[in-house]
Length: 249
Image (tube, rainbow, N blue to C red; front, side, top):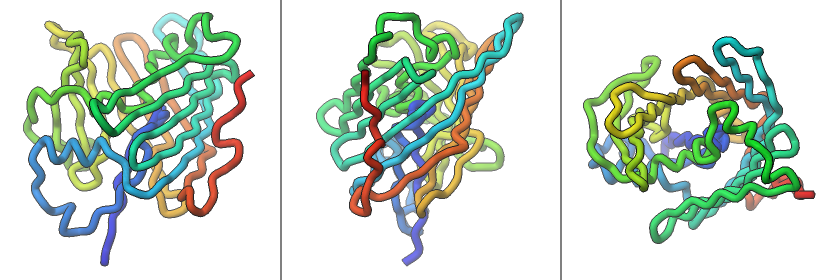
């Protein structure tokens, strides 16, 4: 039987990509026309198999009138059928532990840890939110499905989603065949122009799993590029790295 693999993103970074897991679907399933809710349900949930991923790289931030900034990033992720765990290290001292449940209300929990947890956030300075990395916008309330579009030649279904607190909306472009977000535009309620955007710029195959290894985030007057040149992934049943989650001092 022929199979294709669904690419999920992480940390926004993707976490960065919590939705970095891969879903395996056969050709007949991919060709089926899903309703908006059915399609989003596939995009939201990881496969039945337990998988893991490690990504190491940098975030490079450029803001108008300021010097270019660069910080190191580490992302460790483990997927189970019920939930996903992720750990993000920024600049080696800013640490986030993230959990995404796939039961009940599919809640995401984000905890900042480490001795520097009360200091200002480098992640925020770079225009990144921890839940970007987790792609938690996929669990926002569906307002409507918009006309299909394409991103860099890839056919996408487009969904307008509303945040739980009702303060903003996300316009998500999700690959029609692989159920992976390729672009997201965030807009404040009662505003017309996006204040933040995310685009997937590169992905690669590691041990038969597809992972996102580069994304771009940008808004008025700023741009952040996240690259993960060093990455690894696999099935938990074949063994996961002992250092998948780093010790917190």
